Image (spheres, rainbow, N blue to C red):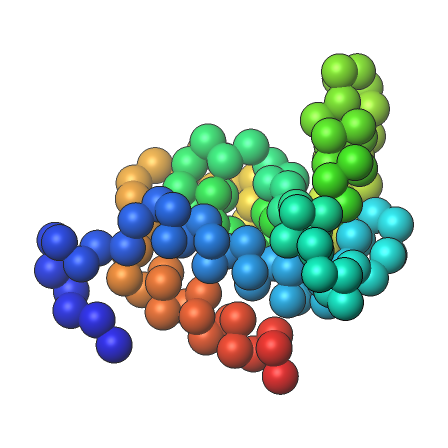
Length: 135
C-alpha cells in the first residue's frame, strides 16, 4: 500500500514499467506477431518489446493494456515502426483487428479523450492485472 500524497504519486517511469510487465505476462512472453516464446531466454527483456498499437498521445492510451502488444525487437522496428507508412498502417490494422470491437472502439475513443488519469488507481489496477496474468 502507498499513501496518496503528491510526493508518492506514481511516476511515468513506474507506470511504464508496470504496463510493460503486464503486457509481457498477458502475452505469455511471446512475440504476438511470430508467436515465438522468449521467456525462457535469459535476454528476453532485451529481445521482447511492447509496442503501443495506437500512439500514446494521451495518458489514457499510454497505459491502456489493450493498446500494448508484445513484439520481438526486430519485428517492432522493421514492421511496427516501418519507414513505409503503408506497412505501418497495415500492422496497426492487423493488431487492432485482434481485439473485440468494443475494445477497439474504446481505444479509438481514448485517442480524442481529454483529462488526466488517477495514477494511484492506475497503479493498483496494473498491479492487480499483473498478478492475474501471472497465475
